Image (tube, rainbow, N blue to C red; front, side, top):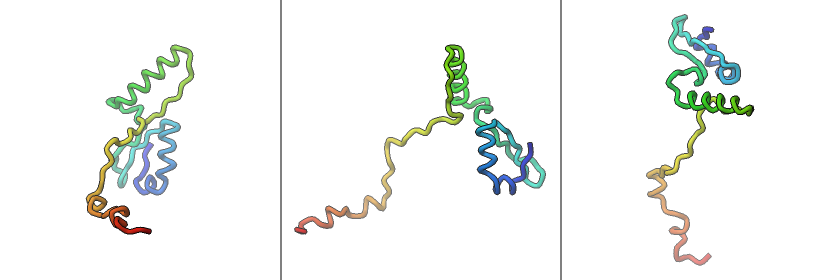
Length: 102
């Protein structure tokens, strides 16, 4: 199904919901010329998460287990938080109060 960029922009949440829940695929058109494809990650052939998900679902079905696995890969937390240069330069409250008896 084709969708124009203006309509996609105005109703993006609804389109993403249809892609996620119903597996719908849309061809995004700019002035009636196709420019992009909006499709679930499950349908992307080289997607590693998709292959793992489908394999796990097949194993669960074979074992008689009803299982739901999210269509997108889980977000991994960052282990090394980035410290901005501004926070390095700013003195801490303890350093500012050093030597004062409050």
